[in-house]
Image 1: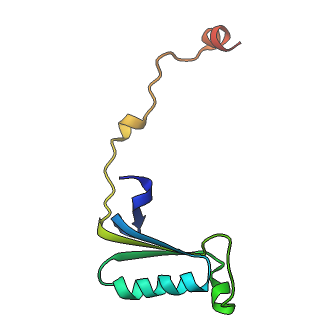
Image 2: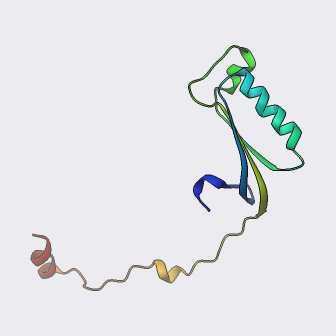
Length: 108
């Protein structure tokens, strides 16, 4: 599993990414919305909307240099559960304490 094929959103861990769609213009936006409508019962769909999406609704001829809408369709999800962490593993262990002599010898 790589960073490109899973997501954590809300209380769920989504995995088994099947489709990714991106919209840069009106035609691609319509394709994204049709995909959502067609597959809303087959996939768990997450959508990332950039601030520029509002321009799509105002100007149907708008084209962006970067995707203003991204659709991710996952086949599986499970409830995200945080794992208990043994906090003692995160406490640093000092091998040699830093005193004046040790500081002079190693850092000056």
